[in-house]
Image (cartoon, rainbow, N blue to C red):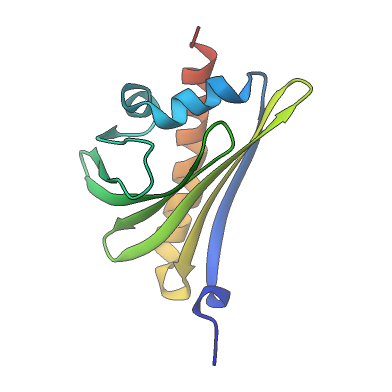
Length: 136
């Protein structure tokens, strides 16, 4: 029996941010802040909550899978036939937070989506960094 997950690819982006995990967490979990760096949304940090992310090009249907405040956030990401998972991990450091984003579940035939996500997440996380820097 083969493991379908073994045949998928993952986009990973990591950043060291000069801000405490609590500040980064706010930008990942507060709807108005998510809209500033990612997309319009109806997100709530509650396991099982179904939400969507909306942009001019369409929408992404999501469901919250895991919430560990200031540590881990995971949700499904479904759009245009892609069924995947986004997981955020925050680790405190001496200078702030190590942020890791994993977008997993890209099958080999989803190469265009994988390349798009690889490019897109770089911009989204750059926007996230600017939003976090502006928080009080």
